[in-house]
Length: 100
Image (tube, rainbow, N blue to C red; front, side, top):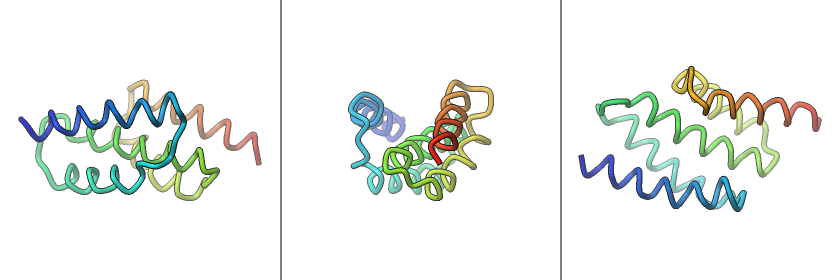
């Protein structure tokens, strides 16, 4: 569907900023996309929702905001179970715990 395509295209742009530049300026924008994705009944809904939760949590990790990071990582770990996102989130959590 066009909706899924538009989410995917914007996610690619976000991912460059978030993964490569390690920026945290897309939190509010992705939260809006998450709300829409949660209301939508699309195929692979869990993974779509989980990947958005992951992107939000990851940005909070750059801000050293562990509380908000975990608020989004906890559901994302369930939605992304068995994917590379799960592995990456666990690595971020581990690193965050080492820095306390």
